[in-house]
Length: 124
Length: 279
Image (cartoon, each protein chain N blue to C red):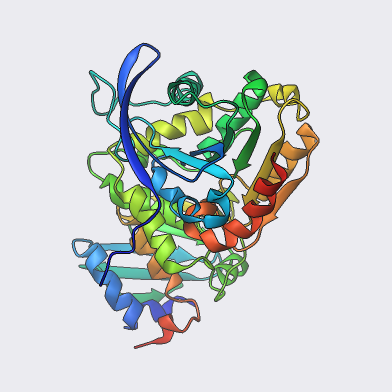
C-alpha cells in the first residue's frame, strides 16, 4: 500500500528540496500491516513492509486500512483529504517524537498525497 | 506588457484601539454599502483580493479589508514583544469597532471568515443594531483543540513552514492550485506566534456556549456559509449554529476553510445571492 513511496516520480522528486536536511525513519500502520519508511536528505530511500519483531522508528502514523484507502482516493472526500483532518476525526493517531513530522508537515502531507492516482503523481 | 491595474486602493492610518496607538493598513474598492471583511487567523487581507476585484460586488458595495494589528502590513502596537501576542474576544471586538468608528462607517455589513466568522457572532450578540447584516464564513460557536497548537510557535520549528502546512490541509483538494498556494503563502509570511496567538481566541477565549441563543436574526440579518472540506469549522457545526439561531446555512461545495481565497470563483457563486439580498 505504501511501498511505492520509495519509487521516484516527478512529484516526489520535487519534494526533496523541502526536506533537504531531514533524515528520519517513520512507521505507517494500517493496524494489520506496517511499513517502515526511511528518509535521507528528503529522499525516501527505503520502504520495508512488516511484520516486524523489533522495529525502530521516530514516529508512527496509525489508521485503519479503510481510512488510508479513503485518504488515497484521487479526490478524497471531506475529512479524508488531509492527515490533520483524519486526526480531527480521531481515525488517525500520531505517536512518538513528532518533531520531524511537524517541522516538515507540508512535506509529509504532499509525500503521502503523492500516492494518489492523479495525472501529475503518475508522471516520472 | 502594459500593467493591468486593479481597482484597489491601499491606505495606512493611525488610530487608538483601547487607548493604545496603532498603525493599520487597509484596502478598499467600490462604492455603496460598506462591506468590512475580516481575514482568518494568522493571515491578512490579501485573502479578499477577488472580492476587491469583483465588478458585480463593487457596483453596490464599498469593500473594505483591514489587516489586523500584527498581521500583513499593519504594525504591532506600541511596546510590543515577540511571543506575547494573544488575541482576546474583547480586543478583537475593540479593533473592529474602532476601525469602523474611525472610518465613520454607518451600519456596515461585516463579513468574517474563521476567527472572523466567530467574531461576527459576538458582534451579533452585543451590537446587532450597529450592522446592516453580518456574514459568517466557516462559522462555529466553539472549537475544541484537536491538535497541539504549541507546534505553531517553537524556536526549533520554522513557523512559516508549519503554519503553511496546517493551512494547506484546510483547503479543498479541488481548489485551484495557484489560489491554494497563495493562501498558504500568506500563512508562511506570518510573524512568529501570531497564528497561535489568534487561535487563543478561536479555540479558547472566543468560544460561545449558550449565549448563542441571544442572537436575534430579526435585529440584524445573519448569513452563514461554510465550505464542505473545512474540518476546523465543519458544515455540521455551522448547521448546528444555524439551527440554534433559527436560520438556514449554505454548504459550499468544493471549498474548504478559506473560500474567498482558495477558490474565489466558486465562492462568489454563493456570495453574490447573499449580497443581493441585503438592502
